[in-house]
Figure 1 (tube, rainbow over the protein chains, first blue to last red):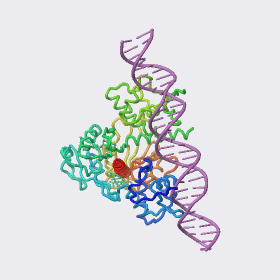
Figure 2: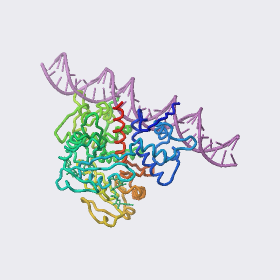
Figure 3: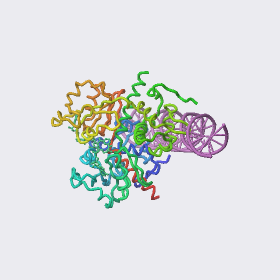
Figure 4: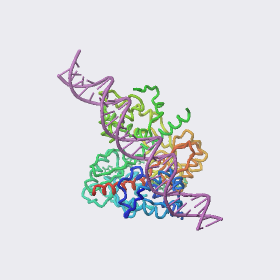
Length: 223
Length: 223
DNA sequence: GCATTTTTGTTAATTATTTCACAATGTTAA
DNA sequence: TTAACATTGTGAAATAATTAACAAAAATGC
Ligand SMILES: NC(=O)c1ccc[n+]([C@@H]2O[C@H](COP(=O)([O-])OP(=O)(O)OC[C@H]3O[C@@H](n4cnc5c(N)ncnc54)[C@H](O)[C@@H]3O)[C@@H](O)[C@H]2O)c1
Ligand SMILES: NC(=O)c1ccc[n+]([C@@H]2O[C@H](COP(=O)([O-])OP(=O)(O)OC[C@H]3O[C@@H](n4cnc5c(N)ncnc54)[C@H](O)[C@@H]3O)[C@@H](O)[C@H]2O)c1
């Protein structure tokens, strides 16, 4: 019967489970969409239908941040969206850099997380002389030598889109320049200091996992 | 004391936990690399160091498939790699299609999961007349009308790289043509029949989750 | 050939996550 | 106002995943 009350929502996260934290961005984006289409209230079960997550899980997730809904009513979409915006630090611009302006890196630069997403790739790095000095969708491409001397303590994270064999080296340079966070698209498992944090986006793994589950689901259905 | 013995390894997956299954592709790729550099044996703890997963977890994961190692010795990399290859259906070519030849789709076509990865994007689809009829890295781009009439029952999965607003529509067409698996790069949560399966690769979610964990780890360290 | 070391496979314990069940409480409509 | 209804927030139960502990067995070194 705690009914946590909090001042700064951002402080409320002592013991938010990892699984909960990983769902928050999906909740946030879904709420953005609901607010945009003029929906002012939603119940956990309707919301659950949309994000395809059990309504109890959703209520429990929200409950780690206190009482965000109203009994018999549901959740105020605008209010909930703004709460999550703070929790996710989306009320301030996050500056990130990108290392490796190849096929994938170029796609990310062109996308640049624009819509409703307070993140900006402010600078890109590569080793290829043909790419250094160019500009892609407003972001300029610089030499890796520059990364070595840049002060990136204000940069939230580095997106790594270099070939697997160069990922560790690139990460080491980024670390040295003051970066602590990585979104790693290469298959390399990075070895990093304690205070750094990586998330992997591994499309090959995802595709193989998909193939695995498809085949095994098929076999189960047979028997 | 069961010491499961099996004929066809592919059959051995009645109750492999989801978490285990999702690690198998990483194990497989790591073993490919080890074999390539001439390493013939490895212990679960050395392997765990490389993939950054606890050695007990690794042994438990393998144990669902029977006794793959030798006490006091470890695992034969070649043998284990080949076993996983079968489990993951990587001993046969998986044909996939790609829908949406934009920035991201083009990057994926250029990559085309070549190296040590038995998957091929055999055909691409788009609505843009400027793209239809072109060829990217050996894969030809066709009209969406063609998807409607194609028989894709031999196609394992569709990679969805269309704008969010068109993802459901594209998926419906793919389903109608006989496809059951999706690797969805758009933020849309697809509504699909029971016998279909999707995996999401959601870079925006990953980036926001990264920012969340970075900030909260920082706060913890302060206190 | 024997003692020592290594390392697996597995059972049990722990921890994390999801789901159930429902009292509490606010909402809605008459 | 009041009764019927909707829906939250949360303990408790169930399920899933990880980690610890260790006997069994094979490998290695002498
Ligand atoms: N493209 C895809 O669809 C795809 C899919 C799955 C995984 N990946 C992974 O993403 C990464 C990038 O893939 P890609 O297709 O864009 O590769 P790419 O070869 O097109 O691009 C790599 C870029 O990195 C640059 N580079 C090389 N060494 C560098 C260094 N030391 N420092 C900085 N830059 C360096 C190259 O000049 C090039 O511009 C790879 O690790 C790949 O395995 C890509
Ligand atoms: N590019 C990125 O880095 C990035 C990052 C995160 C998420 N995404 C997501 O990936 C998806 C693709 O992104 P993108 O940057 O490649 O977009 P894009 O606009 O460059 O490409 C989209 C392509 O889809 C085609 N298309 C549009 N409607 C279609 C339909 N009904 N059927 C078939 N094709 C259709 C377009 O002609 C275009 O070629 C989007 O959903 C986006 O949100 C992309």
